[in-house]
Amino acid sequence: MQAAKVSDTPVEFVVEYLLKAKEIAENNANVPAELRDNLQKALDIACGLDGYLEQMSSQESEPLAELYRKSISHDWNKVHEDGKTLFRLPVTCITGQVEGQVLKMLVHMSKAKRVLEIGMFTGYGALSMAEALPENGQLIACELEPYLKDFAQPIFDKSPHGKKITVRTGPAMDTLKELAATGEQFDMVFIDADKHNYINYYKFLLDHNLLRIDGVICVDNTLFKGRVYLKDSADDFGKALQDFNQFVTNDPRVEQVIIPLRDGLTIIRRVPYIPQLKSTVTYDEVFRGVQGKQVLDRLRLDGKVAYVTGAGQGIGRAFAHALGEAGAKVAIIDMDKGKAEIVAHELTLKGTFMFLYFRQCSHLSLLSLKLPPQAAGHVMLKQGYGKIINTASMASLIVPHPQKQLSYNTSKAGVVKLTQTLGTEWIDRGVQVNCISPGIVDTPLIHSESLEPLVQRWLSDIPAGRLAQVTDLQAAVVYLASDASDYMTGHNLVIEGGQSLW
Picture (cartoon, rainbow, N blue to C red):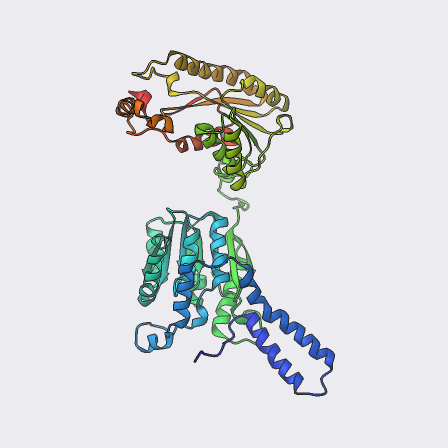
């Protein structure tokens, strides 16, 4: 027999009270019909909200669904009576689909790579967040009950994301002290544990810099059945959470918002530091960032246009993807229309805006492969801003062997000299010219049978012991296209695994 539904959130209590009010109204002939109608309308709105949120939110993965089914069907009272858990764990504490999807979305939005969870319970929230982490991401869950680690681990093992989760059992504060002692930091912290310790966890996180710059703290249950704002509430947990909410509100180090999701979810972020009078802090661009931008933000290309030639394949395709990922609008230029359209479609699928009219570019970064830099320079010099990034080669520095390639080596050396000359002539007019010199890049052509003996010889000449991948070059083109490289011009950025050093 299924247990009766127990109200746990503000909305659920509203529904409960409206149902009671409706019953009273229906049993009293003196209640006006208009009042009954309004009670029913209020009940319809309150009753339908949670169900509609579940229908309209992304559905959970099968491992999450299995974990939820296992959690709600488990006899937690018996587990406690058998002495397997320290506390009697209520089923209402289980994170559900909507809250799990919110946590997952927050991990995506914050681009978190490392997440700390204080209080795991059955692991639904942990697995939800782990699903949003990159392959090399990590989630550390602090859980007091060893039984819960054993409960969740079989489901974690079934999920391809379970390997990202590490559960550390014992008092959460002990774990926090261990993490702080080893200099650990996290992009996102989710707190859902002992309510009386919320303030202590929060203080420790900020005071010991366990939260990275621009990291966020998410705190669950901060509306606690509505008892944090009901004046006649004498609930002990409600009072603890009321004190916590007020403390965070008064903390000048952060800004926060409470989202009325289920039993309340507070999202907290650290605000930029502003020195007080007589501060010993040197509040300059080193401290606050150039134009208020931190170093990674200065690598963003939002509002820029990248005109990429030879973008239909190989290095050009990799550059187009990198520039688009960094926020630039990208124009794909290639002699092979079919290949260019394929790359344009790839970028569209990733959400990159495609831009194709040269004269309308207000901010232009040009990757010059076949198009003479002077053509782009005409537009850039007129607008007083631009970045030209040429593609040269390691062959501009050494004579690769044993193959014979006089024309190629000479032309690439010419690209470097052109870069140096234009770089010095145009920088005072707002245009920087630089180039990238890759080593031998791993492409399908390299793997042809006829080149196999040469590949083995080349590998023996490369200290890195491997050929370059096009992805090895992507960060370089983003740097040279960004504001972070404004003082660099005429430079030949060599990326060849050390081959030119031997």
